[in-house]
Length: 368
Image (cartoon, rainbow, N blue to C red; front, side, top):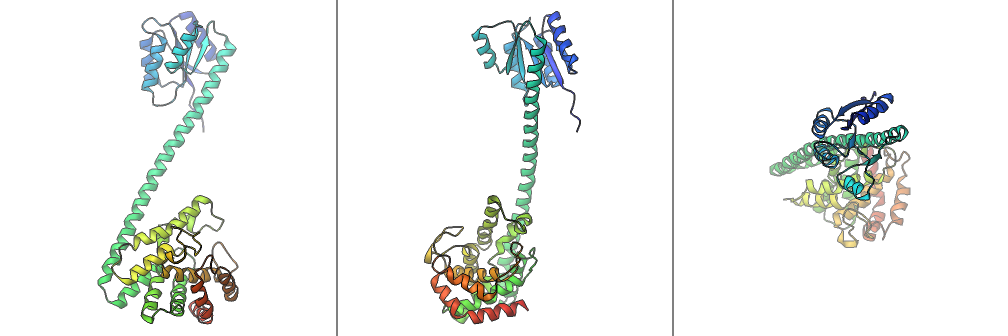
């Protein structure tokens, strides 16, 4: 990318000094515009937008200090102003800095010093311009991101509205809608639908083993299809990333629990109430080290405790983007038994162990 020519504004009332400054700068291949008074200098500053200003302190119609303040007040970008002066008193330098000056150059002008200071300030200027450019790009990116988030939010709200309207349908139609929404939450995964079907069967068997009635276990089975519905709100490049996630991406993944609970909030049926508990709390741990709420022990709703064990069993025994070599069902069983009392509810783990044969059979049936 070819950079625009560097433009320097010289404001100096003494023609000889001004001519000398212009000569030195043009010899270094800088473009130069010049003014002999404050009024002309200010008009050129606004019209030509120079990259640097060399400003004499003593001008016929105003002081360089006042002109520096005016330049700094009207410029929205950083433009270094170097005061050229024969004044050497500390008070003069303090006033110049207070006016916004970035440096001082003492008269008589030494060419080498002029060139060195000019190039130094122009390097700073270029860096500031890049920062401003990046900030503008970031602002545009944030705007596009917000628009995308708003669009996704509208889509989620539309899905919620559709789901609530579905409550007036027959039980069979309602069940089909729930299952299809569950599949939709896994749609971007290569295992489209399989995880949802396995989870429904595993949760059903585990709920029965935990002593729930067949009617309640059926509600749990249907609700399990929606436990990961919040993934609809997670970006593809994070959700499908094969490499290890960084801290920021981990936090984005974790938000799927809150998004899912928001989608299912204010339920009017037992099915959606159970599904909401599963969606929000299926990554909580018995020892309180889970997320999103850090719930501990029986603070975690029972539907979520059951869903957690089933979800981990399925995750361990199936190939995922982040793990190519799944465990056998027996190996996954041992892993879950080791997590009893820390990651998992001991009672649910005991029920899991007792019904392991049925769960393994259900898992294999769902795989076919």
